[in-house]
Structures are given as structure tokens and as C-alpha cells.
Amino acid sequence: MKSIALIFILFLFGTSCSYAQKLESALLYYGQTKFTNSKFGIYHELQIRDFQFGGDHNQTLIRVGGQYQIKPNLTATLGYGYIYSELKGAPNNPFNEHRIFQDLVWTHNLQSTRIRHRLRLEERFIEDRDVYGRARYCLFADIPLSEKKFAAGGAYIALYEEVFINAFQPEPLKTFDRNRLYAGVGYKVKDNLGIQVGSMLQHVGSNKGTFQMQLSLHHVINVK
Image 1 (cartoon, one colour):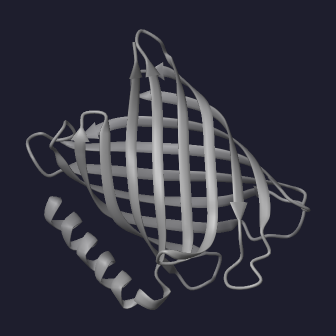
Image 2 (image 1 turned 180 degrees about the horizontal axis):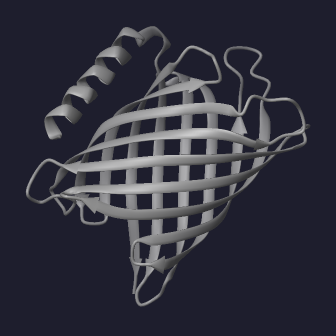
Image 3 (image 1 turned 90 degrees about the vertical axis):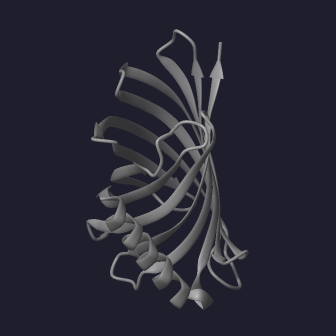
């Protein structure tokens, strides 16, 4: 399975290079604050996306939410997101979006591979528009490359695919919104801090797919 995943990553990176002039980029931070002997926690996230590699700002997104651990492998989140977006090129016509979201994440192992299923519902309040609704399902797979697995010093392959479905909207929209396919390589700097570099292929509606190079930090803050 590791060999297949590595071949897939090389294919995705190779295809990304062929899109070099159209390559998008993103800096991402995914964080959790966990409290000792408590089922409650805090989710925090920051994304900065560009239409071009290192330029032409596309979107800044901030998410924060409260988490509750229903079971050791099942977590629910209720949160809020603020999104500032710009169109490509000039004029960029910026607009704001406020978003309420609900997550349900189920985690399990398949041999040494860590699998996560995330179901997300979103209520979107976009500037000068009516309320939109969207459902998202994401399948994550993290494949360890060393005996340290996901502990400090461990390297791993990170894969995911996410489908977005328009749940309700005030104007005619197709049910399918977009699809994202990601492949990357991660390294655990500490037990609670990981870094990933990867490439994401995104299809929006019937438009041609775009590639986005991503650098992400994955951080867990443990509070005693």
C-alpha cells in the first residue's frame, strides 16, 4: 500500500508541475486545544490561499469551534468561520462570508494506516446574498513510513478526498459543488506538532481542475 501511495504522490506532484504557470498555493494551520480529563476541547484553523504561487490573494479563512469527544474515536464540533475572498486578477471585488459549521469525525485504524471520516454541514451567509447550505464528506488516510509512526520523528503519507454537495440554496445551483483530492508527505516534529507538504487537485462544478501546492501545520495544544 505504501508503494501505491508513493506512486500516486509522484503522479500528483508531476501533474502539478505541468500546471506550473497556473499553480495555486496555500499556507494552512490546523489546531486543537485539549484539556486533561475533559471531553471538551477547542478547534482552531487558519488558511491563506493564493491564485498564483506566492501571489494574487484568493482567500483568508479563520475557523474556531467547540469540540466534544462522544467516544474515544468519535468527536463532534460546533463552530464559526469567517472567510474573506477575492476574485482572480483585477478588479478583485472582495467579499465577506460568515459560516456556521457542524462536524462529526470518526477515526479508526486499518492495520497501520490511520483512517478518518469527516462529515461537515455548513450554513453560509455570503455578503449581499441569501443563505446557502452545503454538506461535505472527507475521507483521510495517513500511512506511516517508519517504525515511529505518528510519534515525534515519524514520517507518513497523507491522503484525502473530499466531496462538497449543495444542500439548499436560494437560487438554482447544481447539486455537485466541488471535489478535492490531496496527496502529501508529513513529518512529526513533536508528538503534538506535524508539518505537511502536498498538492491538491480541485474540480469546481464542471470547470477544469486546478492544482494547489500546500504547506500545513498540524498542532495539538495540551492543557493540564
